[in-house]
Amino acid sequence: MKPTPVHTASYVIAAALLLGAVQLKLVSALFAGMLVHALIHNLAPLLARLFSGRAARIAATAIVATVVVATVSGAAFALIYHLKSGDTAGLPRLWAKLAEIIDGANATLPAWITKRLPATGEGIKATAVSWLEAHSAEVQDIGRKFGVAFVHILIGGILGAMIAVSASVETPDRKRLAKALRERAATFHDAFGRVVIGQGKISLINTTLTGVYLAIILPMAGIHLPLIKTMLAVTLIVGILPVVGNLISNTVIVLVSASVSFGAALASLLFLVVLHKGEYFLSAKILGHQVSARAWEMLLAMLVMEAAFGVAGIAVAPVYYAYMRAELMRADLV
Image 1: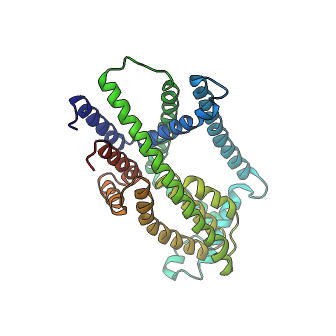
Image 2: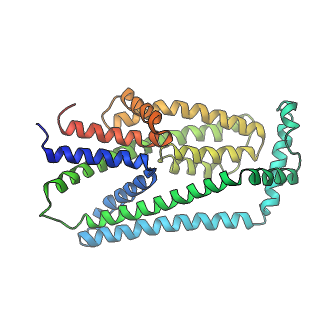
Image 3: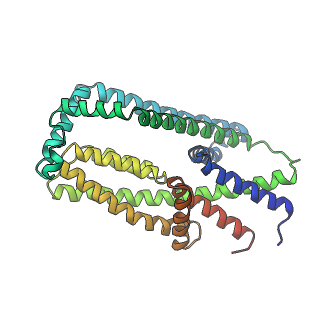
């Protein structure tokens, strides 16, 4: 069936919005909004027995907002408590622990490296302060970007909630372009949901393999890491986030490994590099199956988007390709 001018316009607008989100660095806002919208959309039917359509969505919004606020607040309070507790003894204990790690690395690193490393906690502190002073502009820029990303996520989540609540209000007199754009949005929502399910499967596999490494392989080598359950929980939860989730979980695992020994940190880093190189192909296969695409198609989409937009391109590639394929199938073109 030949597309009408209205449908063609809706496709062009949808493509411009999606590419604009990447170009304007609004991917975090887009994903936050879609995730909140999906949560409310799936939670509202469960509350429909207690409330009417609009009230159920408002109740679902309140529940999602409460969970998010409670999680963020709990994490902040836990961090503050951890830094102030007697077990950690604050930053002085941290500097001393880092000195222990470097001291343990002296036996494995070449002499030309170890002679450049500070040997005491005060030395590490002085080196850190000196580096921060020399790179203050870069540090401020990183802080600014982090703050902007946080605001984008917050606004995206709020917009997703507002759209989910307003979706319960029927508008029978919509014009043709509005109806076509609503169809595009519904198709994108479905594609996003499919990719999230696939990402959840990948996260589960990733967590299982990481658990085998942390709880079985390392103890067999005589290395016992603390906080194994916490690290696995973090890996499972943040693994749903493309790319960024891996960065978060990897950082946590390497830092905890470094608290034991330099060798443990090096082994963990090597394991994670190998794991995620393999996960790159596994993701293509699982996500491809989830959206009825071949693994090579998804892998090619990720490769092209990474070349065009960098890390953000890898993050959006599965969702964007799933959406594009869904639209092509809807038009009976593939």
